[in-house]
Image (cartoon, rainbow, N blue to C red):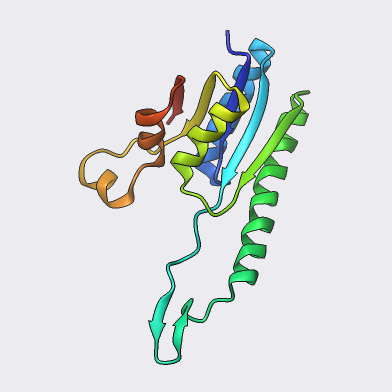
Length: 148
């Protein structure tokens, strides 16, 4: 049914449920799989007594830490796929807004399904905590399977 599935993960326990479900679906359908993680943009520079700065943060160190963290997330997801006998591609999109990057990657990769997890918050909790999943569902050009 699906020929290329994009599976989104942030490395959390909840996201792993989405990864597991997406991999199972890919296994059942013989689908190609791309696993994506997105690191958000650096904090907005601030004005301090010493001038413009990143509130004591070294941008290069932050970039390196984000890259290492993304590699660890993708390595774990890839290992889970390999345990199932699946071959997957991994993709790290740095310095991007997650929902937009996921939708753009799905289009660029030629995916026909996005799989991701969500807490399923509603009302004020959703407003306060935000929902990348809701934004992907609202803007994606292909079906989105949400795993709770």
